[in-house]
Each structure stands twice: as C-alpha cells, then as structure tokens.
Length: 351
Ligand code: NAD
Ligand code: TYD
Image (tube, rainbow, N blue to C red):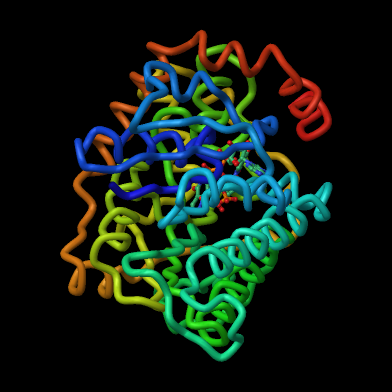
C-alpha cells in the first residue's frame, strides 16, 4: 500500500487528481490535507468516501506540527504538493500569503519528508532514504516568465518569474531542488501549462467567462486579449503527474503541456459560441500589471521518456467543460454566493 499525502486536494487540480488516482483501483491510500481557503471546496470531493483508501484532513501546510503528525500517523511515503495560492490577480493585491503558503509551506513539507524518510536522520551527510519514497512538487510554466512570438519552454529554460505568484512558485521549486542537491531527497518537479476542466474556481479565465456568459454579464478581457496560453485538460495533467510519480527519474523536472496555444480572445469567443452568448458582452478592460504575453510548453521530455501525451483534443475538452458547468450551475452558484462577489467587485468594478 502506498500512502500518498495530497496537499490542496480540495482545489481544482487536486480534487481531479484524487478522483483520478482512486479510480485506478491501485493499492493506494490518499491522505488529503487542505486548509479549505476560499479556493478549497469539499463539494469538489462529493461522492469520495472516507475509508481505507481515503482520508480528508483540514490542515495548513505551513503548520509544521500538523504536517509532522500526519507523516507519523499515516506513514506517508509519497507527497504530491498541490496546495498553493494560485491566482495571479490575487498575488498582485496581496503577495505575502503567496510567499507564506507557496514557499514556506513547501519548505515545511520538504523538511517533514526529510525527517521521516531519511534512514539516518541525525547524520547530515547521509543520503540514504527509505525505499520508494518520493516528493512531487506541482509547479507551473509561469516560473519561466514570458515568451515572445516564437519558442517554447524546456526544462532548462532559465527561471524568470514576473508575478508574485510565479515568483513564489519559482522559489518553491528552488527549495525542492536544494533539498535534492543538499540532502539527496528523492524529488520531482512538474511544470504544467494552463489547465481547464471541471471544478475550476470561477476566478480563472474559462469558468469566469462561462459563468458571466450564462448570466449575460460583461466578459472582461484584459488589454488586447492577444495573450497566449497553452491549454491542457486537467485530466491529462493528472495523468502526467501520475506518470512522473511512477516512472519519473529522481531529481528530474518534467514540463507538461498541451501543444495547444490559444489567444485569450479566441477562448472567450469559443465560450460565447458554446453557450449561445452574445459577442457584444466582450468588454476590454485595463490590462493586468506585468501581464505575461505568451506561454508555450515543449513536452518532448515527458512524452519521450515516460510515454505521456495529452488524450483530450481541445474541441472535445472545451465542449465537455462547457457542458459540465451548464449541468452544475448550483456548484458555481454556491461559490458565487459567498465572498466571491466582494472579490469580483474589487477586481472588476462595473465591468
Ligand atoms: P486552487 O486554487 O484551485 O486550489 C488550491 C488548493 O490549495 C485549495 O483547495 C486551497 O484550500 C488549498 N490551500 C491553499 N493554501 C493552503 C495551505 N496553506 N495549506 C493547505 N492547503 C492550502 O489551485 P489549482 O488550480 O488546483 O492549482 C493546484 C496547483 O497546481 C498549484 O500549486 C498551482 O500552482 C499548480 N498549477 C496550476 C495550474 C492551473 O492552470 N490552475 C497550472 C499549473 C500548475
Ligand atoms: P488566468 O486564468 O488567471 O490564468 P494565468 O494568469 O495563470 O495564465 O488567466 C488566463 C489568461 O486570461 C491570462 O492571460 C489573463 C486573462 N484573463 C482575462 O483576460 N480576463 C479575466 O477576467 C481573467 C481572470 C483572465
């Protein structure tokens, strides 16, 4: 039995990962630790029963005692760290909580893993670890910064983060690297492009536009709408993470991307078409400060080494995603009825 600590498993990608991992019917137990911030939602995990294969623990990854207790109680042998503050716009308003969760939280997890997994924990020179342990840091292509019109990010592209969010993720990646280099901790880092799919919090582009379109509200496009992202269905991301867990070489970074570059305005128009909305709703608003122009992932390493490839075409993925949001209006309504409207008002005003 593998005992996998999934952090941030009540969020968008984490909850999809929990579902995917449990659906495989393997001999694994998932311990999902999530602080249930504004982005954590237990409704994302509806239908997943607590028992021998799954346990939910409300807890904060910056709380070293709580993390340490979990490692002890559950004999954790694998960590998949999704827990993070994840929204660029919020990082522009309040950078400090990004530093706390994304950097300090990651370092707390690394320290507990080192303490519990080292065969000789009191020997600072020892690099011997228990058999089969692994720390996987879920990172992002945003750590590489922005691309011009051509080129794609490889695993050796220098880190050049531009937002407080991406700076915090890059810093966390460097701590993961340092724990590998200094202490020999068995780690991997995955750096994925923009995800879309079910259970994504409606502050992010696709669910925000979908929700507004359904309600006939303005669709706030930043700047000229020609910024490019490389979109990947969340289930393909989860499969990539699992492939790295099972077959990734220790200490390696793997980029995960969809070979699917789209300008934001294209996405917005696709959503309008899929919902039967009106292009008149498109409202160009002031650009995000420090807005990265283009991201694109070169996924040669993960595809050639681990045999991973995206299974979803964008057409199929976006059609299913639109249908999911239309079929789950209550899920969005429950979020929108909370603090979300305060955030929305501060962020977009009347737009
Ligand atoms: P999300 O915001 O939907 O979920 C984050 C989860 O982490 C929430 O459940 C939240 O409650 C939890 N959390 C926050 N602070 C915590 C803390 N201190 N302790 C414990 N739990 C805490 O984010 P997401 O979109 O699912 O992203 C998950 C991870 O994947 C993040 O690390 C993000 O950087 C990375 N990532 C996201 C994307 C994307 O397109 N969304 C792309 C690449 C990488
Ligand atoms: P987002 O979903 O926030 O992801 P990220 O910034 O991590 O790539 O945004 C995706 C793109 O959509 C990004 O270029 C910013 C843009 N965007 C808008 O134009 N309007 C919006 O209301 C939002 C939320 C994003």
